Length: 372
Image (cartoon, rainbow, N blue to C red; front, side, top):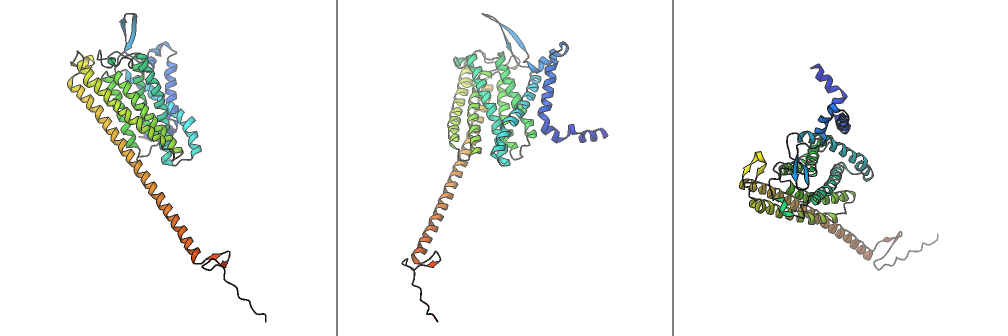
């Protein structure tokens, strides 16, 4: 008991220390892993944290290529890159967002949302470029049939597996960041919703061997989210900058249509024509009718939920715009009423330069006083 009391009172266990120095703690842990690479005794253990595991040599016409599949050791690699994500989060916050916030002088609510959008703009831009590079180099766009042919896609190229591990690490790191960034209680449920949705979809595509389809769907989603958070940043700098929200609305609707179309094409038609229709989880094959229905239902449900949120957001913007327009009309009508009342006073008689004017605008004659 005495040890627990001393531990709680110690600075290393205090809440303020963890909140302000969590990036430094993560940097120390990452540095320990990198130092472990220098010694032969600990190098094998260090490689578990840094490099993807479960590599397999597959013979091809040109020789052999190294491919990967998933396993429990991936959790160790994801843990390492969670600390990398925490460090990068702190770097973007300190060297970019904090400097901009000092110049804008935002309120506490806008300050929190500005930081959230700033972090997500950096992440979505990086992910879009990286994801597009992987899709193009692997030939998934040039040959759409490769999205479902030869399913299950158990063996993954290095860059595909590494991309998925980094994506899972980033969204898992977002959970402790809710505590470290002192997010308001009102904002936590909303952020937990989209963090959970990303984790479910990314982990589902990775574990169910739908990585090729998942890459393209992530690309569509990240492009739409990038436009939204860019528009949000410009709105916080100047509330009159709302044109980018219109561009985001167009991109959002198009991405939803492409997502539904591609999901139906791959899952309902492509996988249904694959020869192997057995449900064999030990071999990584989940291609059964029930599996396809559940996956397609999950995708459609998530897209419908996002469209409902989108329509709700647009209706709220429309109400705010109508209220603003009606307030401006009332202010204009009040100003016109004041001007009309002033003109009426001018016509009936008023004071001007300390002299009383008559109704016709002429000043009355002053009586001459007789000298005593």
